[in-house]
Length: 71
Image (cartoon, rainbow, N blue to C red):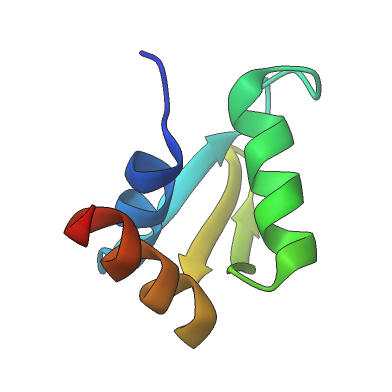
């Protein structure tokens, strides 16, 4: 599946958050986008287990998601 900025933020905004599998290569489009969004303050890691990491949107991320949905 090809992730877009809107999809990543949408999945992260849901109750269960965005799960990134521990086996996800650091050079994939998803990994790079999550890393960038974390640095921009749009996502935060809220949990981690032996299957991967879970991310949710910040307030800034929620605003960005709404802007993308309006477009």
